[in-house]
Image (cartoon, rainbow, N blue to C red):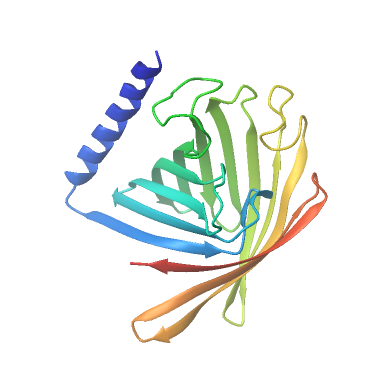
Length: 234
């Protein structure tokens, strides 16, 4: 059964790549973020500096890509991560919409890459929907390999002051009694309140370095984080 599921995933990826490479206006991107620690949706995944590489291939509204996070410590962490995603986005007069399918995989967790199994496999699958307008909204739902089918939701607002971009976010979870460890709650909880600032520092006429800092509070865990990041792209 797990092999059949893997075959289905590979077939989906094959047809997605085939469709993208057949498109006339193919685009590609690659880059990496360097962060002082890895905080995800208000949760501390790793408390060491991380390098977070990414590659993507897209055409039209479709994009397929890989995103990862690896500690820069000389220790091996089970939180090192590789995510495969497939997204479709489009724009309207009311704002921009994006729908995503994400496969979360942790290579150092001790579970083999090919082990597809609901409740205990190497891959957790998530569906997401994002709206970006004057105010942004996002909703994410785990539908595979999470016995609690955890949900995360977020609202955000962006503005600029003196050439510096600011972002405000508030995120929470419905919680899960079957898998409360995933977001740290068995019921409704706010887990991600924060403010971020970002600006691209111009180094040369052909190169700019985006820098950012975020102050993040997780009221459910009663903890705060201050994170610095910079981005590089090809």
